[in-house]
Length: 520
Image 1 (cartoon, rainbow, N blue to C red):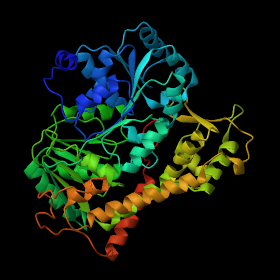
Image 2: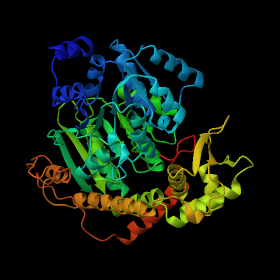
Image 3: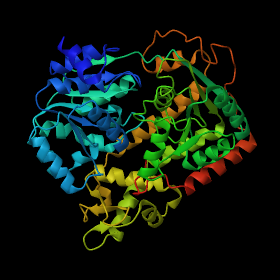
Image 4: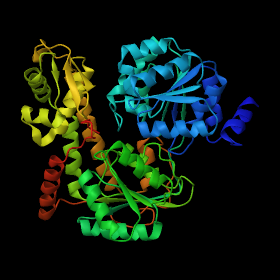
């Protein structure tokens, strides 16, 4: 009865959905919990409601500043005492919020994962009575997941250091392998598992063989005309701008969203789409986490994504009101090569990592600091054609504890500090075998997308099988169930190979990073 009263009083809801009530009971019984629930299924309530009934505070780890801000503002409107701590705050503001935390002012604290790198921050958190740790987007902790974020790796030790309160880990898409990695990385103790069905029966999945841009635009035009409101995903920033410029000529109301835009520009674009001021957003995969607009009628992929997990999470943003929605993936050979380029950039070789470390030693000032952007460092490394690999090498070295990244005062640059300046590059404490395994899995994930795009049989059934639902029924809605044969099963044409080279040269010239020099 207490749960229902709290649900209605604070959240203005009359009923629980899916497994919410059972999950909340497990949390209140102080068990570790793993939740895999589709986008729009109501994951947030599973820790927000218990936080009001538990002593102390609930710490929520959330990966995106915009997502964190949206959730905090929503809870404040409901009259719930909540705050956030992330990189947008000054030291003074962080200290003021901690003083209020010590006084018991808040029930929930949203914290960005990178804060847990700081021993001082973890020490400050030790003074707080933490009743629950909620890890949102928990797949980010898994190197085998589709959105691995190294900062999540600090969480396991940090949680132990603050007294090891119960943990609830939540994600929308996780294969059985990723689920096990989440449990292992967070050291969950005999967790209660709640894996909701991945089926989205209101989504009509289509894969269309479109060899040339003109064909893609032809299909996209029909999709926009019939469905009106939606998201168009593109593989690169350059492609986002090109697609947006093209469809703007069709009198569409739209915004763009990618990592090359400033935080303020992205926030403004997201708000316009969320508030219904515009009907369409053209974006890279930087867009979408935490988006809860319910009337999105279509999702289009102008190129193939890098994994089936990313694809299904992105199409899952359509039709959250339960009404029929259409998802189209435009397949061509060039798409695979662009994703392979990204794989090479996110999986640097042993030689690259050692070379980057050597160059850092040569570039460091008397304080063992380097105040250069990733692109500038890449020029010294001699691999400016793929600065992404240099950025990833810096992340690897940071995780190994031999460098640290910091904000350079009065600039947008992330600096690099050598923590072990005399270390021989041949003795770097890097798990190279683990990196090779990650690259193998990344390539395997891309091949899975290709197999999905060129498969026969029900699209939904194929995806559900991938996520472990072996007995899933056919959807009777997808292009195959409707016997529309648009799959691609052939070798590339000569003109397509030219497209590949042009696409890759364009990718190489672009800086896939945000304004502070961080790769995204």
